[in-house]
Image (spheres, rainbow, N blue to C red):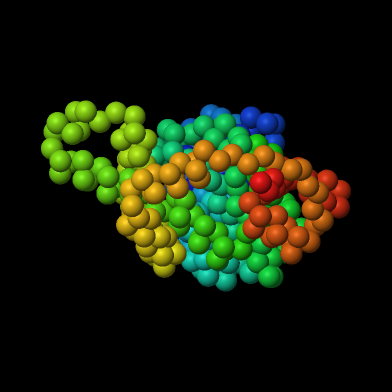
Length: 292
């Protein structure tokens, strides 16, 4: 295992693997991030092998491996919040050695000071399974995600970007809009702000550069998702409140399933809203939501 970029996500991944007793190497352009990772048991080196994880901002993803020595047989993955552009850049360069990924975790904080070895516990980890993805490499990356307590959701890059536009990228835009609107309302409104405002604006504290790169990198799906939100806001308010409450309060159960190591079967699991939580010999074990 090797991690390039030792900020919140990369540093947390490296720390979690090291804490589990797994050998892990890493590199970061920031010497403070390197020192912090080394103190957690990460071997700092420019020579990387095994599964190499790119945990760097989207604008520098394509050049993250420049100046580093990567084993020719290494499998490379990433933690980027947008997948189609990364597949078009890094994926084109690395070919079938690349498996795109995105763990659905993190906070509004950033940098190595936000490292948390428990960050991935219980998180969904989207892992791209394209038509030309080599299944053994996909499984190697999946096993890394499972090793740090995440559950793996098989997706294609395009499916991922459509989905996260609604549940991640638009919420960042809405949080920014709510915070800006509250500021326009004046100091009294901000003084009275409590739990609902805090929860609705938490991610507005994220690095603006990170958020801008994310939404602009997924502009088409994000615009479509924002259009759906505008449509909902145009509904009669009692109807809108009831519809939202029904979705938020509905908690379907889970049904355990075993899925063969087959691309179509794995993608069907992800499309059904399920996830993988264990690797077996010729199968993976996971769950899907129970139909009501």
